Length: 471
Image (cartoon, rainbow, N blue to C red):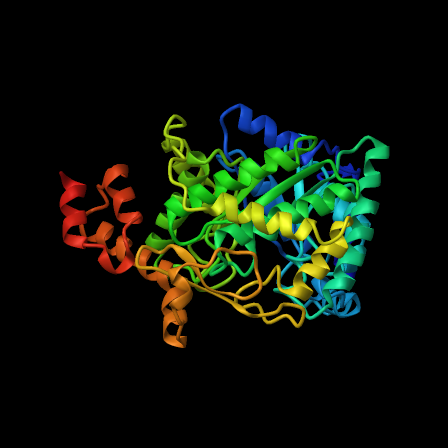
């Protein structure tokens, strides 16, 4: 779409003048929904065409679920290549997200006009290690929720020096926090609990989520969310989310905070049915662990960028699955494999490095106290490794200089074939379960299915599963 074709959107929508959105706290909305017994579900949606982006937000708002909106930005904008984004817009080239800086404030106001409101807040998602221009653009458009962090949006996605990312994010947080002077409560979500998408042991995900939230707190934010990515074993995830909630309750007690779970971010099942099973399990995990918000993925993830209808279908599927999980069936939390203690140890070691958490984070990576497995960023030591056991549990096999207890797993040596097998573990498991469901008419009761979901992938006995399903 050419820039000139935006004019109707900028000037008027539905015959009314464009006005700024009436925005209340993103965190307050999620908190109210949680108290009312609803899991808030959210898409990853982002389109470069403003009219299509508006349609996506409208469809999200109208979905049969309690939802919040998402504007996900394009790669040019994430990398700060705003002139390239402007050229693409002018030439009518479709991008892989919404170029909020290139399109300008008036267009974004047109996209959100009449949609963004206290009962439908919108979050801007980006992936930038140096996002000041993005923060300026979203604030100018009356939006007050975004996400990321100086570590989680630097190490996996760029080669920007971590020290520079910390400086840039400090500046962004302080500018964002000043929204409070206007009566608006800004909300910032740490992406730290989603590092690398998979193969990062839960204790490090918990520690990074909390450390980034503390960074936000230091720079004036009072409303935050802490992310955690669904991993490869549901029981281990339950323990990790409980640990995250416990530590957040201890260190963020003066803040408005909630936990957001991300549906599995690694290699997705190839079949639509397998993808749906995986998303349903994410929604039930969220309910069992008291998570307030779930970011969904769609059945199209393994093949292409999903369209609006597929995003809405995923939102509604997740909402139905959450509703089917009785609230009283909360995770008992009796299992303790040491995730809580390990996460606390990591956090304490980092905080002891410097009174200012920004410098502490930089020093922690420089000394290897923080070291993300398989992350190739120059500021990451790269001396840690993890592996999956036969039940899909993540363990350390090389700990480098991290303050992590050494176990028998230190003797494990991960080959390239092992890594490839681990990366496809969830894909294989849920496609196998989908095959079982298809073969036996998808009549399994939740209890039988849950037993299969928590079994080792290569030990899923489809014949036994089928017999339990039809009994």
